[in-house]
Length: 106
Image 1 (cartoon, rainbow, N blue to C red):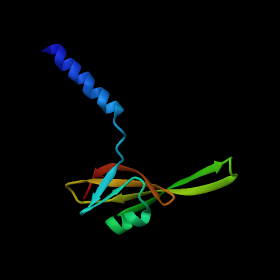
Image 2: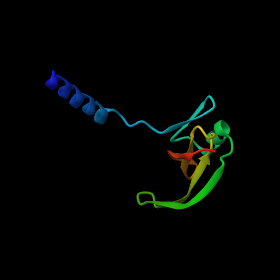
Image 3: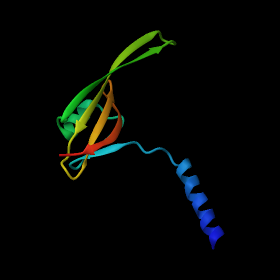
């Protein structure tokens, strides 16, 4: 019995490494926002954030085409009340690139 449970554990861990990554998502009422959404989509689904924080700029140079682009990196914080964690959304340019939990809401 012990070897069966060990084999099962190895199998489950293996499946976790083979499964595709799950993008972060956040629920706003009955709407879902996720990585890849635009600022406009997030605003339409969730409304204005509690806080917008300028983080800096991210630059990219494409040597093949000789193009240079500079994008603002910004965090938006949403507070959904004292029973939930605040959600911090990171944007690069106008694209949502990451969602993480913040402190407890208020």
